[in-house]
Amino acid sequence: MLCVLRNRNGGACFSITCHLFNNLSATVSVHSSPPQSILSTNSIVPTRKTPPTTSSSSSSLAVSICSLLCHRVSSNSDNIDNVLGPYKGVLNSKIVLRVLMSYKQLGRAKTLNFFSWAGTHMGFQLDHFVVEYMLDFLCRRKLFDDMKCLLMTVSLHNQGSVSCKALSICIRFLGRNGRIREALSLFDEMGTVFRCKPDNLVYNNMLYVLCKRQSSEEMVDLALSIFRRIESPDTYSCSNMLVGLCKVGRLEAALEIFGRMDEIGVIPSRSAVNILIGELCSMSAKEGSVEKLRVKNTRRPYTILVPNVGCSSNTNSGSIQPAIAVFRAVHRSGLWPSSFVVVKFISELCRLGKTEEAVEILMIAEEKKLTCVGEGYSIVIRALCEQRRVEEASKLFGRMLQHGLKPKLVVYNSIISMLCKLGNLNDATRVYEIMNKKRCLPDNSTYAALIHANGERKNWKVAYDLLTEMLGFGWIPHFHTYNLVDSLLREHDQLDLCCKLERKLENKKLQKLCKIGQLDAAYEKAKSMLEQGICLSPSARDTFKDVFQKCGKLNVVRQLLETIEPD
Image 1: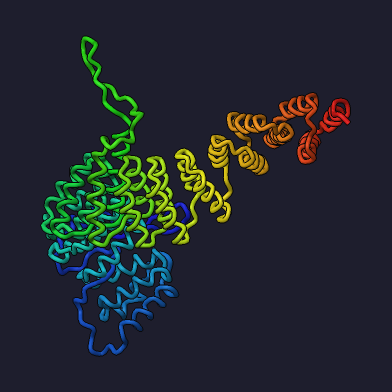
Image 2 (image 1 turned 90 degrees about the vertical axis):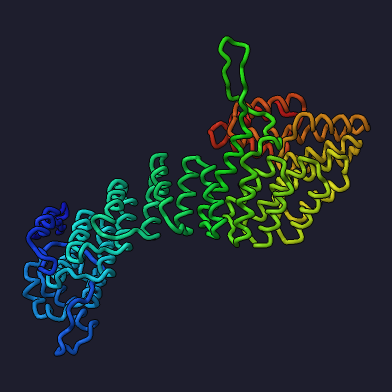
């Protein structure tokens, strides 16, 4: 019984009525021909021998059948039996599989009709490989009703035997399309309906559906019950459970499974390791960000969560120790997390002050030549500088340069700031020279650290040169930084340089106001400068005119310059 429907685009889509197979089991023997229904299978068991008179190979016969299907079978496939009738006696699994694999040439409709015709004349004594291929064909096209009918038909004509791989294909695609309950129902019917004992492939696909595609407390509990039924868990079954447990925040159970894997010698997948270490680091960060505080001065005491300002202490490291153990275990097995997870792990270790472990991981990453080495160096050096551990930071910085890595601006700033605070101005100056040699442009923080360090030593000339250079790069110094240099110049009777520095600063401020589009503020700034007798620099004058000209207010600028600007 074949039901041909039409979709919105006028194309043929096929549906098999499931009640057909229920009636079939009561009226037809196992070896009788099934009804003509559209089914999809991948390989067919050769139950009929090719007649001795047939001299053509399976390949040439498959080519001939494909040619007839393309050119002589009508679009609704009503004449398929008349066209392919001579081939009934020579059909076998190999021929049917070759024809099915030509679905791109035949199209979906003719492929499904050919399989229905071939299965009918072969009594649906199908090879498992054909069934698996056709189930995959149907599932990829979301023909799940036809998939179920195919399973029932094959089970009926093969004494209920269906391969584990065929069922795993169905479970995987049902899960991918959100049909979790149907996948679970199919899994439960394996022993009773299909007389098939689940193997690791079936278990893995079922755990994949429950843990990765539909991770919730209920589904993960169900996955755990299924996982405990596996006699010999492998990499994928354990990894699926690790992912599912981490997604719902059950890290203790995930660590328990990981410990069991280590005992039986099963290595997790890289994605499972990434999620486990990443979630442990995230949990460690949450532990450090808040603290529980018990409020007792009320009639009913209660507990509240408050932000932990000192969250970088070593006391809040409950989740980082298991992460370190997991990392070392997978490293011994030859596995390595992704660069993103390594950077996250190193960052969390440095936040907790565990720089020795962070350096250990960094050295392993450098040995494996990972892309995250440069970022790892930056994180560890910054942490060492915050702890003012000069020798370790200097050693890593030198190693970084020795290996041809280009330090980021934040690395230079951390080292310069640390050296300046410790009074080691000569080394800070050398790092600044290396910075310029490596063509890394300094910023406001770089200049501020060096200027204040030189100011404390009364090096007015160096401080003045640094501030002038800072203004040349377009950086506006902080009020305290400018005042420090101005005081040094006045202290050493350098009044001309004071006036020159003030003029440069005011012109730079005017240019900045013009660039960010604050015209009213820029106008008032220029007016104030001219009233104080501060001349506009050529670059500041041009910028001031250009920005007002674009707004059609050039006359206002000309009037200001003509009336107030001194000769």
